[in-house]
Image (cartoon, rainbow, N blue to C red; front, side, top):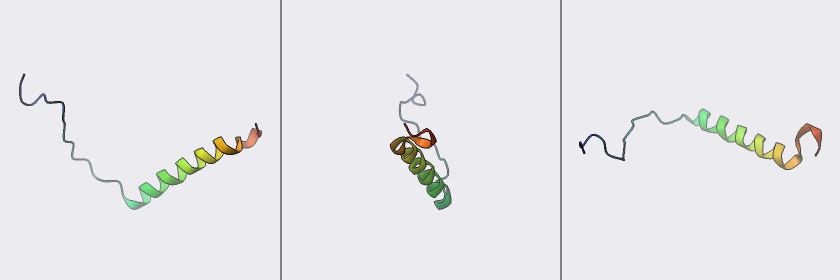
Length: 43
């Protein structure tokens, strides 16, 4: 097996900015709230 086909790949992706993390956290919280509250249908 060639050394370039290892299972561990290092991808240099830029880290998400603080605003991106906050937006993701807010979206996740809204999704959890909808699940807990039953959403607009009230189930």
